[in-house]
Image 1 (cartoon, rainbow, N blue to C red):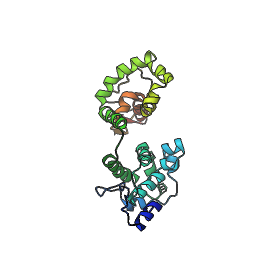
Image 2 (cartoon, rainbow, N blue to C red; image 1 turned 90 degrees about the horizontal axis):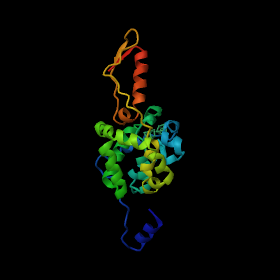
Image 3 (tube, rainbow, N blue to C red; image 1 turned 90 degrees about the vertical axis):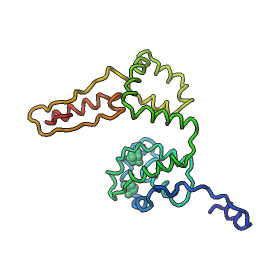
Image 4 (cartoon, protein in one colour; image 1 turned 180 degrees about the vertical axis):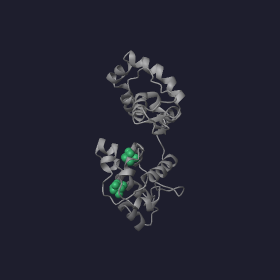
Length: 233
Ligand code: SF4
Ligand code: SF4
């Protein structure tokens, strides 16, 4: 309890306790969070930790924040920022020698954040746009043409030079910087035949964003599998 809260209790005044981060509907499991022994083996495998070197942007740090929430701490903006920044890549799950199920922890945490955290209007708009676009390959495909034309006339470089997007919507600016230079779409055939004797048949998930914006990655994957004797469907 804080000094203010103690003073208020001593004087008989009512105390405004902060709203706890989590409610009881699918609370992140305290037992799973307790499995983390803070060894740090997962840190080098976490891209956000490697990028920023911030403890709270590592799996261990995020689990600590979950524990704070489980102990009744409030869901602060900074806490939400660290949860939001997790890419959900789950590289930490396979690198953890203690078998910590971070995937289940972050899944439950994200649902709590969506229910209990008031996002700013700008944040809501950006997230709404992302969820209305990224899971839909057809919508992404429709965006390719205009985006490619925009890149060809140098609109992306001009926008970066003005710094306008950076000032108005830093998250959008970061995404724009990561957008690949689009070339003609490389479509995968329905079946890529194995080179030489067939050893296996592999079903390949081509993804939503990857299929439309990074098709060369899928094409290269199919080539490698075919070279290893796999029919790729
Ligand atoms: S999540 Fe696993 S690897 Fe990472 S600090 Fe905790 S116990 Fe260690
Ligand atoms: S899932 Fe999140 S915490 Fe785990 S390695 Fe990926 S970015 Fe890091």
